[in-house]
Image 1 (spheres, one colour):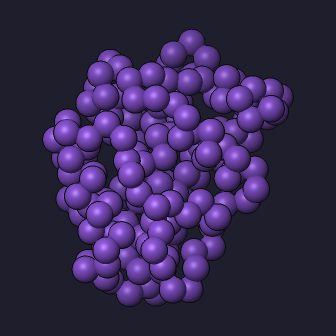
Image 2 (cartoon, helix red, strand yellow):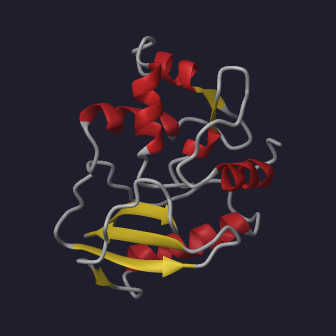
Length: 164
C-alpha cells in the first residue's frame, strides 16, 4: 500500500486498543488498530490531531463504540489498493451491520467466484478497519476466521453490532 505523500495521522483511543487514523487531503485513507497485520510504516507522516477528517473519524468511532452510531459518514479514499482490492473493499461497504458474509459469497458478489483466496487477501489488507467492515466477513460455515486486527477484536466488534 502506498499512501499519498501528503498523508497526516492521529491516534484515537477505543475499547479495543488505540487506533491510528490517516487522512490525505479531505479524505480518510486509513484506520488501523495498534499492532494490526499490514499496518504500514507511518513514521514519515506528520501528526495532525486537529485535521478535520481525522477529528470527524475519531468522533464517529467513539459514537460507534458507544452504540450510538450504526453507519459511518466519512469521506473515504480507497485508492491506495490495487484495482482488485478496491473492488473488494467497495463490496465490504455493502455488508449491513448485524450481518456477515462469507469469503465465498463476497467473491461471487464481485463477479469472481473462483477468487476466494485472493478476496481473503484483499479483505486482510483493508486499510480502513471497522469503517470498511472487513470484520463482517466469516468462513463459509460462519466460522470467525482471520482478522488483521485479531480474532478477539473481530469477536468484540460482532458482539457490539449484535451479530453474536
